[in-house]
Amino acid sequence: KGCKLVGCGSAVPSLLISNDDLSKLVDTSDEWISTRTGIRNRRVISGKDSLTGLAADAAKKALEMAEVDPSDVDLILLCTSTPEDLFGSAPQIQKALGCKNNPLAYDITAACSGFVLGLVSAASYIRGGGFNNVLVIGADTLSRYVDWTDRGTCILFGDAAGAVLVQACDGEEDGLFAFDMHSDGDGQRHLNAGIKGNETDHGLGSNGSVLGFDTKNPAYSCIQMNGKEVFRFAVRVVPQSIESALGKAGLPASSIDWLLLHQANQRIIDAVATRLDVPSERVISNLANYGNTSAASIPLALDEAVRSGKVRPGHTIAAAGFGAGLTWGSAIIRW
Ligand code: ACO
Image 1 (tube, helix red, strand yellow):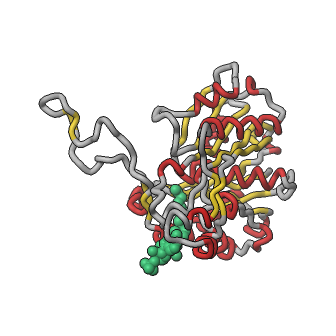
Image 2: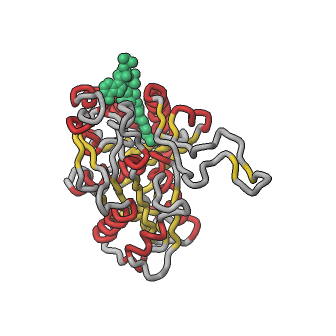
Image 3: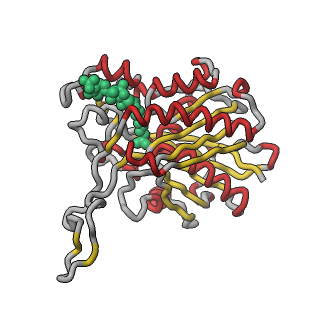
């Protein structure tokens, strides 16, 4: 049995924050940000915006493109590290879409690699579990976890959602060829947003109090990142991972129509493309407009590329996500 991508969609909040806007908040400049990262603008949630709202909008557009009714969806995978409910936000998307058959819906937490891992999960459910229509949504609102006084991180991130519908098909139509996935918990020290109080002893005290946590205010730290280490990690592992996935698919790097990486930094994208010998005209990049949108970045860029006619039916895409965990993974896809 095969599986293929039959629809995509995306949604971004309306509030735009430019590099010049950020230079009023922290000691930075448009010149520094754009030359070091390639980012010029990012979208950030405000007012009544929500992660679930963005994710549901993106999913709706993917279903419309695929001409599939919400009642025919039998699994929703929400790839996010920023749910609005600690117990998971995916069921809220099932509710918002009005999927009448109550499909299974749950969250996958793997930071910027989440979407690729969601694709792998969708393919496995379809190939082994008798599922037919699986929505894979990448959505994050990291603006809620950014320290807006830290110029080393607040310039990088934006909020967004992107979705694809993965559908069962005959083997010869298969559009998800090969994957490669890894994680390295040792690298967590370079990029994290841990729960506060984690380092202290905690447990039930003799008088019934819970020690070690501020129980009135349990919360996660803002994003902590060693940018140089994350940069080195990405440039080292991503080409290896894509080469491994291409090897499993029996394809040379020269055969791919598009390289679609997690949109973290233009210098990372350029370095990986150079390492794989993929010319810049075959590299998808939209981070100038949105910054790093974590799990949303790959489906957001894919959706724009499909709707603008860049990515066309039959094109082969090498996609790779990488980020906190540390986690990383690649997928070779035919649109
Ligand atoms: N504006 C102006 N100056 C700045 C800024 C800023 N926004 N940020 C840092 N600087 C300064 C530093 O203070 C430092 O000054 P110093 O030399 O006087 O000490 C200097 O610029 C160089 O700082 P570095 O951190 O060494 O800059 P670098 O060239 O490494 O660029 C960056 C930083 C852009 C963050 C880069 O390291 C990077 O992109 N790393 C990868 C980040 C990434 O992809 N993260 C993915 C996260 S995905 C996820 O899973 C959440």
